[in-house]
Length: 391
Image 1 (cartoon, rainbow, N blue to C red):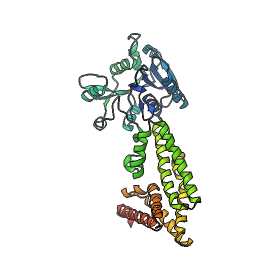
Image 2 (image 1 turned 45 degrees about the vertical axis):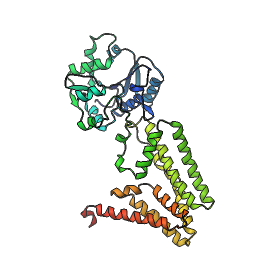
Image 3 (image 1 turned 30 degrees about the vertical axis):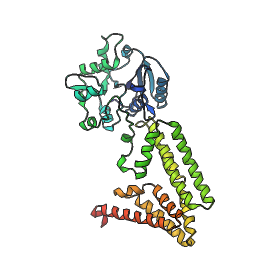
Image 4 (image 1 turned 60 degrees about the horizontal axis):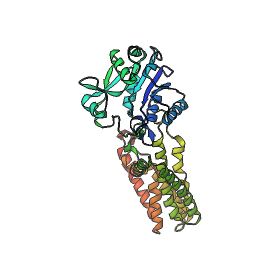
């Protein structure tokens, strides 16, 4: 596509407000149309055109999202409104209604220049894509040069702009590229798949801690379509953090540690729901410092509770030494590259183990177990390093 200026244009579609299909369907707490706008903004389109019969609430939200990002927005009611709107130096990105190109490999193809993406006819027909010939179907995404619009002049007043542009692009001999077999075989490329493109934008699932992978993400996926429940979870996390401070004040350090663990998980889950509900995946940075710091707010209470609990059985000198050694080894273990280091990527397990030990009246048991596990992970990480780094 052309440089980042007004020569980059996107054409999206919005069907009638009957049913909840196409770009009206909700995908991970946001509509497919809003997620398409995110893709067009990520591809640096500075003008966004929406082909729709009426300007309803969804179209208004789409306009607000586009203009908030600095793009111009225009509603098109008839296909022939495209005539005279494109210059030869313009690039027009066209996405089929309902398609979510959530793979960075595809975004890179669309960013290279004029291209028509294709999919084998057997897979494309089953997925609802428009057939081009006996062998291939249109994959629902293309970038056309402005000169291709000249082919529309002979078409009727009621033409479907997307289908007309597709045929105009083929007449203009725009390069056609087939999607990779891996993308097609995964089932993620269709007009109806409820795919939240969060995994393509963020870290892979394999790099997440067990708490994030098996608790936070599954719970967030269940709550993403239930804003009331997710808000309640966020409030519960805040109350658990306050309860941890209160338990420490009331000389209940074990309860405080367990409350810190609960608060961390609940706040992480609430942030995960917020992240999935945000349609801006590729066009805007992540949640930044707020998302990173919020789950950490209760953790100083956890450190203080660990010290207070140990002090019930040991002198101050031993208390600070044990607490420092426990927390320090846990943090160091989380910096390694070995697969075991994922367990120590966040401190929920630390507060849970030490809190349970405190409830049992054996305050040394939790720190001893946590330190032993962390030291084991450090040793595994050393074994995992190349020999040159161990010299």
